[in-house]
Image 1 (cartoon, rainbow, N blue to C red):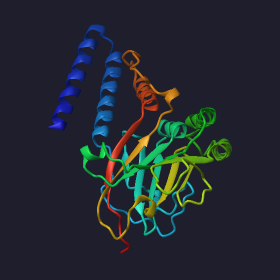
Image 2 (image 1 turned 180 degrees about the horizontal axis):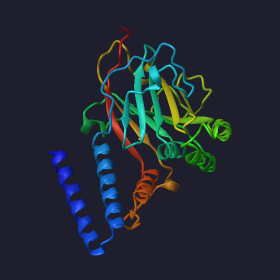
Image 3 (image 1 turned 30 degrees about the vertical axis):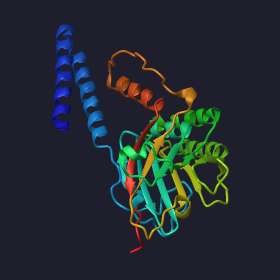
Image 4 (image 1 turned 90 degrees about the horizontal axis):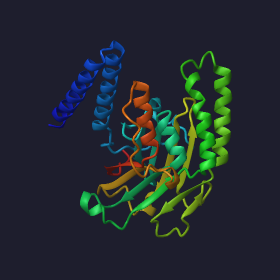
Length: 299
C-alpha cells in the first residue's frame, strides 16, 4: 500500500513537472525537471527503507573504543539508516553494550560533529509506554563547541574536490587528514550522560573511570566514526536475561543552529540545488529513530 501511494505521488509530481515544461518548451528544463523528480523519488524510497538493526550481535573479542573499526569484518557495520545518513551496529559482550556508528560524508559528518549523537536505552519496549518511561539512560557524544565544530567542518569540506582523485592528490589528502585529526583531538574532551543512578556527574571526561566510554575520529574519507561502551550493570541489564529493551539514536542539533520554522527557498532548479536544500534542512533538524535489542550470549 505504501509503495503504491509513493508511486502515485511521484507520478503526480512528474506529471506536474511535465505540464510546467510544456509551457517553457526547453529540453534543458525538461531534463532538469526529470532529474529533480527522480532525485526526490530516490530520497523518499531511501527513507522508506531506512535500516533499523534487527539482529543481536556479539561484539568482537578485540573491540576497542578508539573511533576506528578494523575489528569489524571488512569494516562493515550492520545497517545503513538513510534518514540519518549513517551506518551503525549495536552489539554487546558479557560486560558492555556498544554502539558503533559511521556517518556518510558530508552532511552526516557535519551534523554529528556539531550536535553529537545521543544513545538512549530504556527497558520499555511498548511504543506508547516508552513515551512516559522514567528509566531513560543516555550518553551524548561528541560535545564540541560551536567554534571548534565550525573549524572542523570547514576542514572536512576541503575534502570534496580531492575526494574524486585522492591518488593524484595524496600529499594534500594526507595533510588534510593530519589537520582534521589534530582539530578533532583538541575538540573532543568530554561527553554528557543522563539517567545513571549511581553516577552523580552529568559531564564526563573521555578519560573517566566510570566504565562508560566514548571516542570518535574521522577516517580518510572524512566520515566520522563514533564508538560508545556502557557497562550492562549501569543499564540494569544482564546477558543472562533475554528480555528485549529499546534504544534510541538521535542526531542532535544545537539550539542556536536549529531550523525553528520552515524556510521558503523556492523550488529547486537543478539536482545539485535540490540536494543542497535537503542537506541544509537535515543539518538544522534533529533526527532520530527507535530500535529494539536483545543481548547476545557468547556462543
